[in-house]
Length: 211
Image 1 (spheres, one colour):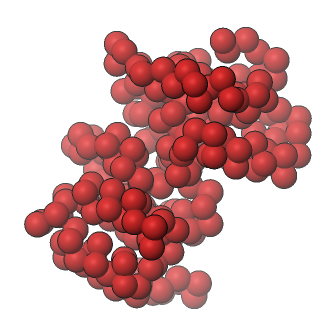
Image 2 (image 1 turned 90 degrees about the vertical axis):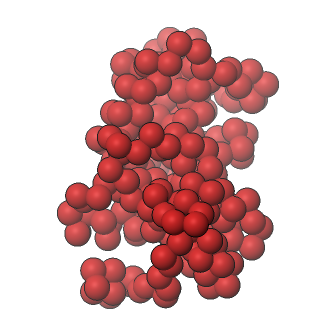
């Protein structure tokens, strides 16, 4: 009812299980799948992995509905292809906005989720370093990656780095390609796993040393 109340959005199918979600996604190829992690028969994690890996549904974005504090599989969801998260107590207007953002391919994690992601990475004693991938990044791309990891939008990054929004979009696009990331949500994971972004450091100002 909520989604259909928006003039620019429409529900084309509903699924009661992860397996059904996969079948419907393959058949209908929706722009966005709103996925619960905890589903019967096949859980949301496995369903989104299949959707992300299938060439036929590669363009479909998955927006995860989560309680976060109780869902220990959030990181697996990011790596499995989730484009972002909305909390189950999200206000109706914010849920609609999140669907639009994910559909546009410019997914951003909510500030509360981003803070918890950073806190989780801060508690992890070891992080795999993506050495080969990182060597392909330019200095400016590394700077943009740090800003993305902090949850900043393209316009916010542009203001902080004193460049145009189009330039930021170009850098983000190159980062997605070079790091093999599906979208901005996975760039956040890549930034912290590689050590390019440091938990607690916040977004860096232009010219800051983040090596």
